[in-house]
Amino acid sequence: MLGRENVVDAETALGMLIGNILNVKPREAQRKIEDALGMVSAYEIISREDLPSFARSTVDGYAVRAEDTFGASEAMPAYLNLFQEILMSQKADFLLPEDSASKIPTGGMLPKNADAVVMFEHVQVIDRQMVEVLKPVAPAENVIQVGEDVKRGDIVIRQGQRLRPQDIGACAGIGVTELAVYERPLVSIISTGDEIVPADVSPETGRVRDINSYVISGMISE
Image (cartoon, rainbow, N blue to C red; front, side):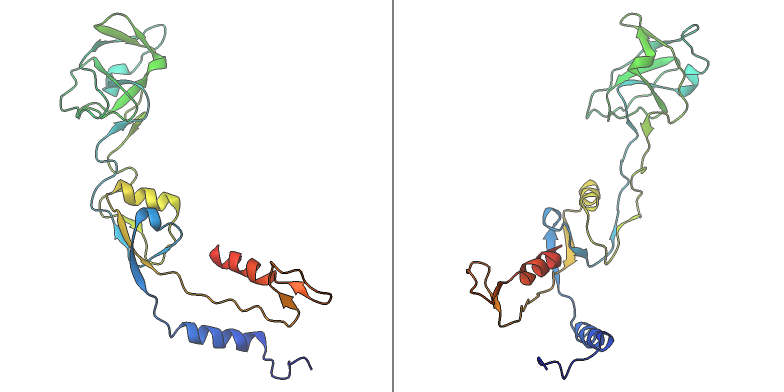
């Protein structure tokens, strides 16, 4: 009745479907990272560099040697000499003298022997040559270290991983602008039933507009 005399159970039908899929080798394609969102990586992506590649400040403030601020308080501040100001995108290729501080913006590069940053809110400027620190900082405080996000040799993208926005950003951060991905599968949707008419047709009595093909198409796209 209704053409169901040859129906098979769900397990058998699924086995037939998977059996056919396994015989199809996925196709690979190169995609720019901005076009790869939602696609599946065909290979591992391993970082060839540290990210970040230099120690950076996470706040606006003053780069210091943490030990020079130990014991500082509002009642007994630590007095530090102002040294060379660090500008955004500037290479801080100098050594910070003892009991000194360098003004630094968020994202600025720390001098090699500076290991912390005091926030502006915890510093009182005395004059153009000196500041007083009202609160101590610990080593590495307010600093993102070399390789803290990604270390050289880390696997950034795994084979078979579906690419998310943060994965695209990670690739950009390590200089990878193209990825090998699996092509999206080609899918045909067949909506059956003598009572079905296209969605843009006004159905006669006894007929219905096609809904399932649109729903299934959306599910497949997702």
